[in-house]
Picture: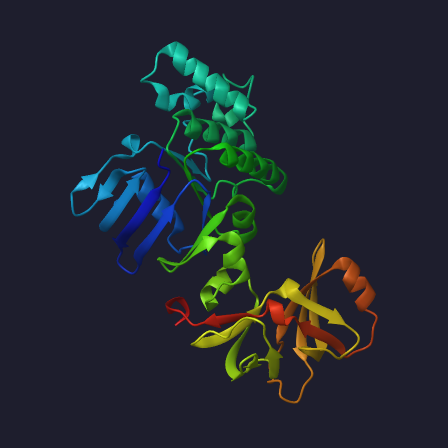
Length: 362
């Protein structure tokens, strides 16, 4: 059986243009991007809840939308399960009635059997006769997931399904989603702006920024080598500098006032370099490649990690408030905080990302 979703659509708005093209298979595809980037609109167009201006959507060889051929199947005929952040359960229906809503073409016995199977799958046994208002947020989301799965969809679309849950419920629901998606034999798309969530749940990622798809590939590759400034930014990089080529393996970080050895081949048209905050290492001893004296400007304390804002103490360093942001464990902070300045920060040559400018950042 073919498991493939082809999407190539455009949607014109007054001050915004959605223009995305990607292919999804049997691996969960995370759609990652900031708020307002067009992620949810893309999902709604695939589901048939919004109509693109032009393009096509093809699921498992079946055309759902084609602007040139005048095809636009209604959502009920697209064989897709849709899970939203606000659950969208019918308040006047019981849990069992909500889950069985799309099964009215089956006999009562067959529908009841499917509902029972799905309720067991999401651990809602015994709650068949309750109404949504009588459920916790996590239970409502599990009921919505069961409803999406009950119709045996060819594609499962999840739009920020965890964002309305507290931390504890989110962790439980995330574990259920990972288990469910690993067993699901269709196309699954997972929309989120949370990069860690996207990484844990998805196997591949498409990055959308300002209505355009700007990166697509295995999640490990997207995070390790984002290639452009905007993809690095969307995937959580905090440290950037304008860059200038010095030699085959050395670049100048213009905004940090230092020269850096690098390991990656320097791409043509490199404009920036970046390094993730947790890839910086700190010590009280100098020496070594890409190691520079620094001072601490300020510190923000988290429950498990500390964020440090550092200024390089070098004659060439520009006069700015801080140059680099580092994230370290509390244990590392306790061993470091009483040591006299200067401290030394190392930018691992293997961790430095060489980035091109792209249309999303001018």
